[in-house]
Length: 144
Image 1 (cartoon, one colour):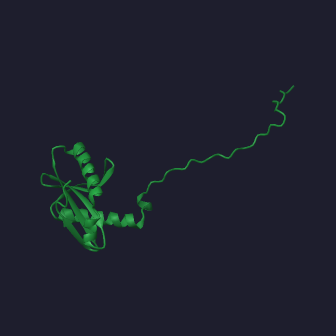
Image 2 (tube, rainbow, N blue to C red):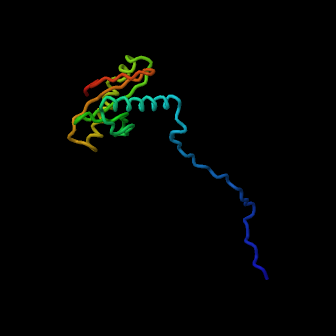
Image 3 (cartoon, rainbow, N blue to C red):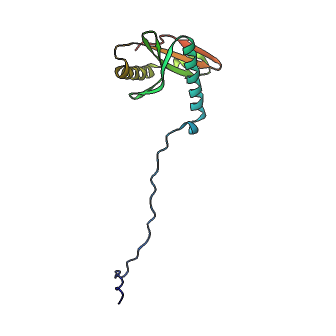
């Protein structure tokens, strides 16, 4: 004789609950960069080429250091140069956009980078402003 079917409680119904899908956090990739980000990337690439033409040796680009980001890290002899790159309509706008708060963030990021890479090196902060087709380089733009 076949086995008796399992008893089901009276009134109990099984309903299929829809599965919840987990949302994946999507970080920007080179394919999904905004037009502004693409222009910024282009300005940083042009700045790196310009700096190499000026005799600096580019060590790193777009470095996450601590809580900040360093656009370009270069060497000028025995000095480590941290370069902030700005793309603006006028050169003055680019220089004025680096206020005390941004300088503090850059100084902390630079200190983090130096501590993890070259603790005994001297450092300098430069600014490169890309205005249209022109590149303006301000050596030793600020001191933290």
